[in-house]
Amino acid sequence: MAPMGIRLSPLGVAVLGLLALGLLYHLYAGFLAGRLGLSSLPGVGGESGAAEVDLRELLAASVAAAGAGGAEVKRVREEGALGERRKEAGGEAPEKLTRGDLASNRKMVRLLRGAFPTLQINSEEHLDGDDQEIIPWDRTIPEDIKKQVQPNFVPADSITVWIDPLDATQEYTENLRQYVTTMVCAAVNGKPVIGVIHKPFTGYTAWAMVGGGANIKARSSYNEQTPTIIVSRSHEGKVKQVALQTFGNKTVIIKAGGSGYKVLSLLDVPEADQEKADVYIHVTFIKKWDICAGNAVLRALGGHMTTLAGEEIDYTGSVANEGGLIASINMNHKALLEKLPVQDKPSQN
Image (cartoon, rainbow, N blue to C red; front, top):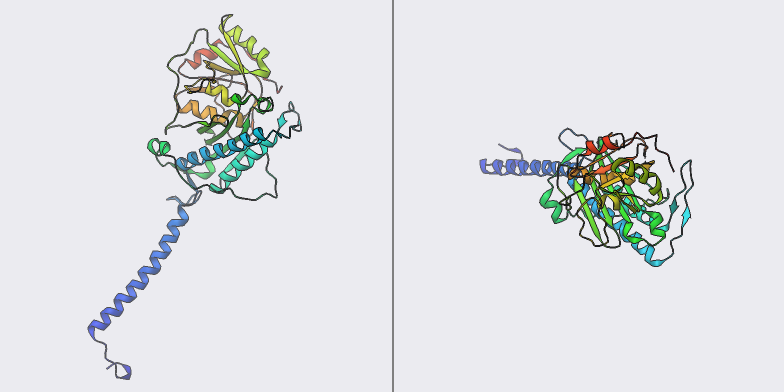
């Protein structure tokens, strides 16, 4: 007999047992949901428990960041108060800095850090240490990325992000808007994998992911014998000599600003003011945030960007690429390298 004269029928015992099981299931489900929710956060989770990032999400966020930065670049230019000044030289040739550079940098870095707090991000400009605001990203993946790119998780510590918040600052101050871009690149184990190049004043964005997809393609034909060479406006004399030695007096030289613009000149960009070239050559010191996005786009499309000595550029460690560069697509890149004259160590001017 039960205490207090209460009898427990077999049905009552069964009901109590089911209630107890239901309570245990509820507690376990809540615990499991918490674990799954945690593992779905950027930079957290993975089967091994190591921090991982979905490259498809990172590509989508990079497109959003480049667009957000570009909006700031355009806004400052149209307001007309650029706040132009010289950066501290630090042993290198002095460069210009504007409010557009800083406003774009803030938007791009804050958006990507908010979405992927564990990633190493290298940017041309620096943030105010007291500014800790997070710029939200709504985690929307554009339809063109969804259709082409599958989720691809890699360890977060294998990724280095390179941001150029305003490429072609000199041209920006001269109101040569066609040359200006904002760029984001993600390298995995030092190899450029994600590239985004955005043109703020037209709204055009090119993106590509190695082994994933792209919204841009190569042109249908290139001239390998006497190619059109695109070079920096400030380095025309140095590159022209190399180009003429390499390809002969019939070689056409195009002067342009911004590495992003020069890479786009090798591709099929549907804009009237985008010049077309066959090869991009740079013979002086250049920073990795200037070239990483373009390198990734070319790699994704089967093209090449190497030092003038033919070495692949490693996007870890130092921010400097001291080996110059030559970039091409749908051409015999090795043959182009063999034509180049022997180079001295590139200068920083």
